[in-house]
Image (cartoon, rainbow over all chains, first blue to last red):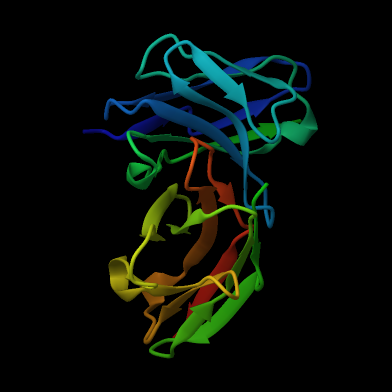
Length: 115
Length: 114
């Protein structure tokens, strides 16, 4: 299994540009998550999904959109990039059958810079 | 709502010395507790978790953590650190009931000095 994969690894955007961060998992996990990590701030949840067709906002959803059309994929869309979106983005997934089985597996991250 | 406080943002320690990384949480309901580790330029990986039972939990790479309900703490310890333990460590909580996402602390950067 490849686990959780993210593309691209690095990206530089200009203010106002749009892009999609890709995330895929091959573990048949029902839950998927998007986080952003800023220095000294830990991880903040942007959006999450409990299954195909179902998404919900996290702590910092403004400026982002998500969709979940398949179990495997959970892309994150930035419509109008702003410097405040400069961050490292992590995708994660977990298989939640009961609360005790919920271990999140993380991708390697995408480092995004908005200039 | 739940919250996590990691009391030290940076912890320098000499190789082969013991280390303790502190984590306190706040929650009005029962929670599960986790420690994740992030090595440089990598994603996070699970170090250990407390679900129920014994309050002393053993994880990978010789780490252990102790759940203290009265002090709402879940401190991480290792009796002898190695250079390879240099990383950022995150404490996280989630509620037992319901399907709520993890809430992470801000992280503690452990630097092991030769």
